[in-house]
Structure formats: structure tokens, C-alpha cells
Length: 323
Image 1 (spheres, rainbow, N blue to C red):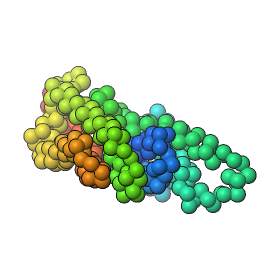
Image 2 (cartoon, rainbow, N blue to C red; image 1 turned 180 degrees about the vertical axis):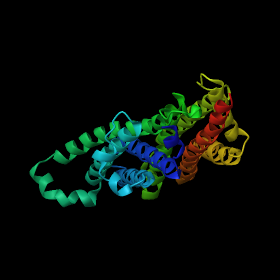
Image 3 (cartoon, rainbow, N blue to C red; image 1 turned 120 degrees about the vertical axis):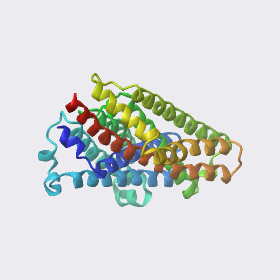
Image 4 (cartoon, one colour; image 1 turned 90 degrees about the horizontal axis):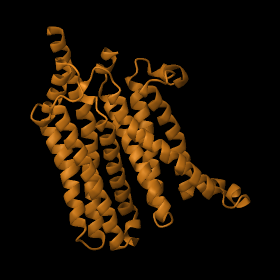
């Protein structure tokens, strides 16, 4: 089983990133839709379709990691072991793909009008269906965001991933990226112009809060790993420490401090605070700039955590053999 986990390639990291981004975008769009659906109709539709694209691309990335991708398309055969987080996540991603697609279809005016005859015959049906699928999708999205961390935590033989803080960190990271994606789409579609300065400040405050929570989780996570994590044996503690040191001062320190910390956390935080003092479109544009930085930082976090966890585990296993 350890050999299977250490064989994970970049496709799994991309799958974790896209799954989290799609889930976070759907959550942010759904919550916005419950508050101001009509005003942000175009931004919501675009957000839902982006969530669909992320989940679909993530599933394709996961299938490409399988030895026989063609056989993996028969999911009831390839992912039948439901005690595995990989299998649970694959089925959840497939269900999310269907639910997200239906929600996007019902939210987009051009596609929804294809069934205009049905809506005229059954008044209110479209709204009820959209609400039901949005709520079901919200549950699936939260599971997907949590699952991206649980998949790594449940992997045996990787001490750096063995912490309950990891799923929490990935959930906060996904929500932060999703919020910024929806904000950027609101700017691009023009619906942000109709939002008052007070509401924009409220949104900026939410972004600041999410970034603060993610920063705190990352700090406590790395502090715990520097102390050996949850490892019961010296080799496990050593592997966890080496992984953390690779991020903080080792070969991965430059992308970690540059992309994850400076680009994904500090810059969006500064831009969000700056937007509180700007008027009109300038405030939203500043928030939108932080979008790409947050998404890049979120992606780098997944890739780096996967890389240093497996890389340091080889050292831990070698030490275990020596001892």
C-alpha cells in the first residue's frame, strides 16, 4: 500500500487542486445566490460552469493516473472499494459533476430557456428544482473540499499528512479560492457595479477572515510537523520534520514562501484591506487581482504538500530500515 501512495504523480495533485477549487467556487456561488440571485445571475452562471469544468478536469486527471484509464471509466468496477477515500472521492466527484451541471443549466438563462414550455406548464418548478439541486450540490461541495485533505491524511506511511489539521486547511484554502473566483466573475460580468460600498466591505471582511483562518491553520500545521507530528516512532517523527523543513528552508522553500505565503496569503490579504478604502470599481478591481494570486497559491499548496510528504517519506523509511 505504501508503494501505491508514493507512486502518486502530478495528476493526483492537480485532481486535489481542481476538486477543491470547483467545490469552493460552487459553495461561494450558492451562498451568493441565496442572497442576491437576480443581481448576480450572469456571475452565478459563470461560477457554476467553472465549478463543473474543474470537477470534470479533475476526474480526467485522476483517471489518467490509473494504470488503465479506459477500464477506470467503468467506475463501478474500478472504484468499488468504498472503504477507500479514493473511491469515495471518485464517486462524490461524479455525483458533484452531475448536480453541478444541472444547477448550472437551471441558472443559465440561455440553456434554461430550452425547457421554457415545461416551465410555463409548471410555474415555480424551475425555482424549486434549482433550490433542491443547489442544496444537494452544497453538501457535495463541502464533502469534496473536505475529501481533498482526507485522501492524503488516510494515506499510510506518510507522516507529514497524518494530521486532522490537513483537511481543515484544505477546506479553508478551497473556500478562499472559491470566494475570490466568484468575486472576479462579478467584476467581469459587471454585476459588481450594482453592489454598494458597504456590501463590498462586508465581502472584503469575509475574504480577510478566510485568509486569516487559513494562515493560522497553516502555521499550527507546520509547527506541529516540526515537532514530529503524530508519529509514534522516531523514523515517522523524523520524516514529518524533514517535510516541514523542506518547505520552510529546503529545496521547496522558494515556491512555498513565494507562491503560497506571499502570493496566496499575504498579497490577497493586503489587497482586501486596501479595497476597504477605495471607492467604486477600483475596490472590486483590487479584490479581483487577488483572485489569481489566491488560486495560484492554492494550487502550489497542493503540489508542494504532495511532493514533500512523499519525498521525506523515503528518508523516513530508510531510517527505519537502519534502526
